[in-house]
Amino acid sequence: MQYKHSKQYAQYPKNYQLKLPLELDIFIPKDAVVRLLSQVLEELDYTKLFQAYSTQGRKFKISPVILFKLIVFGYLENHYSSRSIATACQRDTHFMWLLEGNEPPSHQLINSFRKDRLTTDILEDLFYQLIEKLIESDEIELKNLFIDGTKLEANANRYTFTWKKSIHKQEEKLLEKVKVLFVQCEKKLNLVCGFTETDVLGSLQLALYLMNKEIETSQFVFVSGKGKRKSCFQKLYEQARELYQRQCRYKEANEIFNGRNSYSKTDHDATFMHLKDDHMNNGQLKPAYNVQVGVESEYIISIQPFPNPTDTNTLIPFLDHLFEKLGRRYPRIIADAGYESEENYTYLKSHHQISYIKPVNYEQIKKKSYQKAIGKRENMDYNEAEDYYTCANDQKLVNSGTHIKENKKTHFNSEVTTYQCQSCENCPVKQKCTKASGNKKIQVSKNFIRLREESLENIKNDLGICLRVNRSIQAEGAFGVLKADHNFTRFLTRGNEQVLTELLLLGLSFNIRKLHTRIQNNRSDQHLFKEMVA
Image 1 (tube, rainbow, N blue to C red):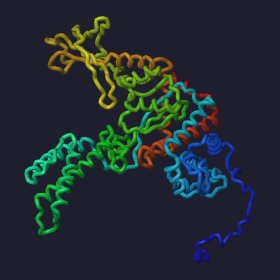
Image 2 (image 1 turned 90 degrees about the vertical axis):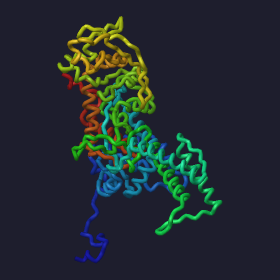
Image 3 (image 1 turned 45 degrees about the horizontal axis):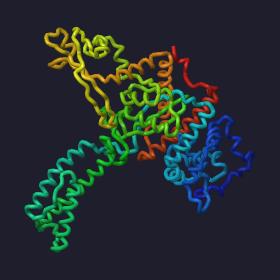
Image 4 (image 1 turned 45 degrees about the vertical axis):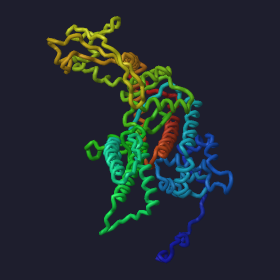
């Protein structure tokens, strides 16, 4: 038991003899994914990454390219934390091979490199360089973009929510208190501050300035503690200061909302959403990000986080960002019913992109109960020449005017036409047709109906069926791999920038793994799963 008396165990060797080979390369299989990863990442241009370092000072302890390889391979092998990657560099021969004889990095070095050096601008540049390489090698065709979204839980405390409606209610209550305060200041202190309802913060700031000036000139002394009675001036001053601080907090909260209805106190960029993983089965909201992914030929072409709980308003910024990075637009866009809106249809039409978006009511219109519902617009006859609908009782629903409906979030204007029945009195089927006490009314966006019918025809033909099947396999399959195989269901970092960094690293590792799989299975020339179509 002599080893108990020393903390250095190397001084008690078991006569280990040096054996050949010393080179780690012989232990790495020739078809290992780490070899492909190293070759692919070596071909990228790291000019922007090296520009993030100072030209002065000492040299790198480990090359930034090697550190980048280690992190991407770590994500490929489900090592997401800096400590996990650092441990793998000491124990895993594949990580040691990537080190090229360098000393294993500490977790602090890995973390600082990922956080401070791998900015989203640099990482996006490297990510889309890889996409361009795949395009050049005919792995990606730039023909069909399959889009899907999922919600991933943010690295924020679950019950740290701040609600927009709650803040607005508190602001209304505070406004009433401020009005009372200014009236009291004028009556009791003869202090005229000039209250402005549109600028509560500025009014309070002016009141405090005048009060502080009064304190300086009169050399007023504040009292506190047991047995001391505060003067009227001190009470009003403390109340004004408290209201000012509260209004500052409300102003900061409104700036953080940025069009959202909620945010987390521990991650301001996270929004509270309904997640599928509801362990309490009560539909509680959790801080999360809506992650959007675009896939073609099984490769992730683009991956971005959004604060929107729904997918509808993510399509346009997602495609704009992709065009900004690639400089090209996909001719066919395939997405599920969550992306359907007149604004999205109009956007795709204006950019000469064919829509393969499934209508929201696609499954409903197949049901007999829907087809028998006489009150539905789809089940009424339409006379395009004279612009009127005919109901089940042979009554005309004539055009009674149009109005513009604006989307409050995106400010998209839609022209809506109202059709009204001339007379629903004594109608035998009125109860089945409408719940209104007066005449039957329907509101129709002609442009939306026309674009929806075009998209419906697209998804019904042979190509559309094939693309819909592939969207389920490729886009939803990508999320299945990330969640189930890579066990990535919650972010490790906070803030939109750091979350995007994690997603881009996931996308890089996913694409390299996919390239390796396709090469090994001789599927490099396969872009669609055509055999799945009956």
